[in-house]
Length: 377
Image (cartoon, rainbow, N blue to C red; front, side, top):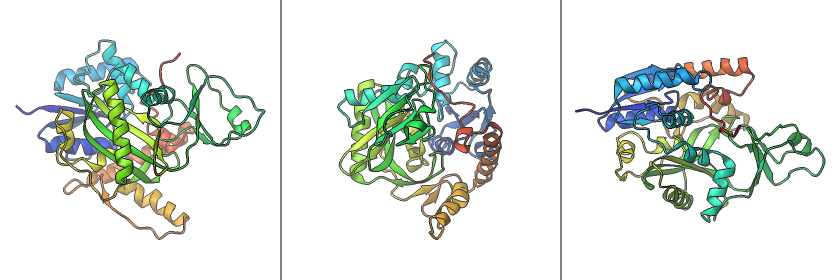
């Protein structure tokens, strides 16, 4: 009997790539989101794309929608890809039926997502990580500038709400609280790289490491290059240490600054990231999530999100005095399935309208209805 998979966060290009991978492995894939998610809805890959309420704006309706969908589909696995993962884990802890969620418990998710607790975890495991201090009250306006430091919200994402070497006046303008804390992190010089791992029972079953060669102003990348072997090995070692210590099952993504000899861990995302694109497509990730060690080697060529490359990418390269050119492979369109390219454009327009309406960045608009900022109140 054919198994069914449910992928949430259907707005994400990573979700579409995962859907193609699970389909290649023989599963019937359904997807869900609180946004229109045309990138997935206009694809031939999923059997259906379902709409649920926003977990931020209507938590109870979100839980009702998910429980009803799971009862109807009876999925063999539920794979969250964006920050709805925290809301699903919270619902599971409250006794709501969310299916076989491919994610650890909420406390572990929060421990990894919060920049202060992840830093403490990394240091306790003997991993390289910059000194990070939790800030729960406004900083003084007097004193020297915070050269050599980065100030960022404890639960920020995509590099949003990050201030590099801020002046004292700029730092004093933020208003950290115990419920919404910030962190002050020692700045490390080097090249930022990221990793993505599938973990089952504390064992890594699939892994990729990469860096974003082009990013939006908010920090979200749209062009990706596999990491050099040395960086990959360092991030794989760090990922194994974290995953093994926690004994977790789920997704584990690390961000680090590599100085050429050491990879300094700066934060963690316990969800899908762009590292998916280096491995997805022929069922390896699906089998990895079901406990089989992937025998695939991540691709050596670059990947990109074509709609972003043809808009922000062209403008960015022109601004830098470079001749615009495409490198690598698009991960949104696929042979016989090109409509997601138009769907991604339509989604971006919708998020752009939301960003103007709510006076937030475009990147911030993409997560406004699903983001998780902890529960420290």
